[in-house]
Image (cartoon, rainbow, N blue to C red; front, top):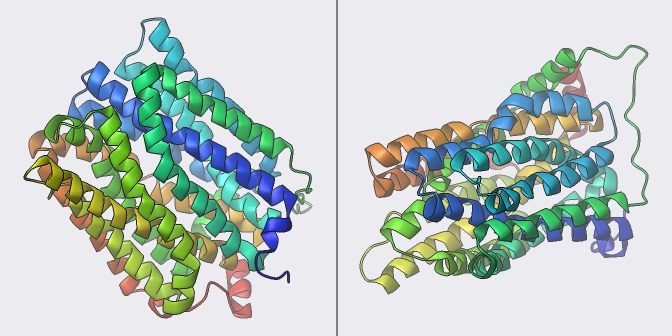
Length: 425
């Protein structure tokens, strides 16, 4: 086992990390620009905003399970390179549509669906590829470093995105994200460490049987089952809020694009703190308590949006304070949940486990987005955001009543490996 910090000397991991960092910063532009195009340029309704947010997550319901089974049959890195290159081309359709005068909510939805489909392929391969790139004792370190990049992107990315939207216009600013995916593809292609070929039996089981294998693993493993329920519930209610946040900030709180970008950046400073504190918190509190407290804090912080009232300074303070708490808690939860999943799952089932978890926890997001858009019109934006925050906070109850509550470390006992292999067979 290498000493802690050894990943700083692994050139292939550093190249992978650099590519992901560039891509994460670029994605912040699209996350801000697309809803701003819909809200300010296309004057989208709450239902259309819900639909626009839903289509990017719909591919997880349609393609996640077969993608996981297929990626367990092949090397993951080539598929990830192709997915990044494809997303660069697809996102270029937004500025192309704007220049051609064809930009519409339907155009944005089509691009979102295509990009979301490629994201399914990348993300399922990504989480299964990391254990092939670094040794398992360094999974928490690797995931923490990647989460630091995600957090830094959330801190600095929105301000950069807001400035690009202001200078270039929202549609042209998306080109920055397209370029970041192209650079990520080049970084992945430059990794020299060979990826082990998946083990194959004399007779390859049908794809459907392999999909069922991943479903059985998650259904029978109580720790994976609790994570699926907690994350799925939190994502369902979180997507309700996500569909309406830009509308709420621009139409009810009357913030412009630059202000929205700055608010998101200030909120996301908590994400960097959370990513840096994730490993020490886990060692001090134990894995179970860390997961419970961080899941509850995510929902509690979301109350800052609907409770924002009074003078402009007070509204900004409420939004930023709530966002700081949520942004701090998310990486703490993500690092430990992902490291646990990777540690207790056999290599041969990593792709299907990740695909099954993502099918559940991200597949619920289009449903939450559609419901958020509908409730935004029926109940109003503020009431819907309040309901979403309460539901997200309640997601921690799945962990409270699960075996994970008393767990200290993300390391399985030898019996875990045998049980998982049996469950998957």
